[in-house]
Image (tube, rainbow, N blue to C red):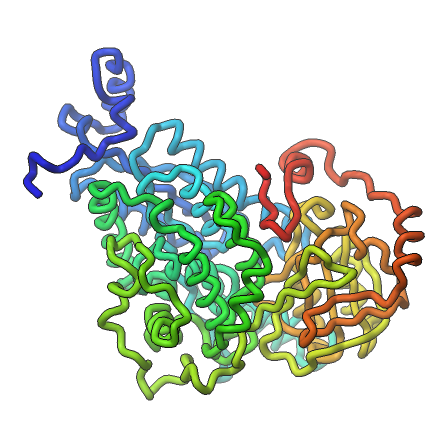
Length: 564
């Protein structure tokens, strides 16, 4: 294609840069560095999640600057703007955690608002903490302009006594200390060594799960999802990401071309293969809803039954995400899935090539000197680890993460708590017994509001040595660091009168993974009588962001979105 034949790349921004009537607009742009020649160039947004709030985002500014510089050198005009983050690890177990899932919507709304308001031609989003990623993808889906996501990178593991540590190690240490299995000095040693630098939580927790899913969907560059924030290659990958925007602009490749139903199926397959977070169900449903693809929670179960779990990663496994990267990263995992017919190879990606074309030169098998990626033929489990359970407690569905658990069916008396805090107190003070089924309710999207993660109580259970001996169900959700006999996303939630609101202390609950059931052993008549007596709890917040969220948010079973 000759230079003269190239299409104009300023499809959107020309409405503010072209013509005499736009002289005031150009005057404002000159004040931020535009010159005469720049008004013909595409204006590209750089959504920067830099923040000192969390190590997940503290190293993003340098990457955003690299993207900005490369856009300028490649013939575009970058405009950087900020967006927010909430640190799950810091807010976990507090009221602040109610803002975590809310932040996904705020991030999406803020990116969409700036891009629409400024009539940007394309956008590159640089994010770290786990809500940055689905938030950015939701915005990209709404905008449908050429878009690329840049993951800020994972944190490197901490080390103590020859063992790798992550932030989950510190959460579990709290339970170990309360159980008397470690000393206070050991608790502080773990605290001091768990998070050695910048980057998102190191295991296959939600951040690395979502970065892997986004790479699998084709919305980020190959290998980008498992790099360390602090390594030089992350900057080089960011540079390549910015460069890739220009061919996308020329061909007008937008999210509608990439985020197809098949792309989401690829993401689900990769999540199952790597043992990813339960939050992937929530976030992928949310993103897909803006593409009108008809993806449902049942599709996760259908794919789970076909895809083996063959990557040995924390929280239930041995290794951290940088180990996966050194073993071949997500491209290696995808190549193995593709060879088994478990991946759609014809999906378009931000490289301008299909998945199959991107994977053409990836070896069929990883090197024999690594233990992270197992052969597909001898996996950790022949099926995926995220099981969708239904039953009288969760007719719309719930999500269980079964990697690393021994029991496929548990039955026990309910121990009912109307908040995470009350439950955690009971665990720490040894009021939970072997065989109990903990119920944490009124922590759903509306009831919390905000659908808090339950890492504090689940880690305390593990730390107490009860990981295989106590079940837990909740209309809240779990951190990607959670594992054990736990079921989240119970829908309908308690606040709207779901059956979980009707359970009483001592009721028998059955979690049956094999039959994919979650039931309380009560008759329909008994449940009907209890429902007639039930009244919703009054709203916990009258005004502000949490009040607005509670009014707008949908069921977890369709992604907990706010504009259904």
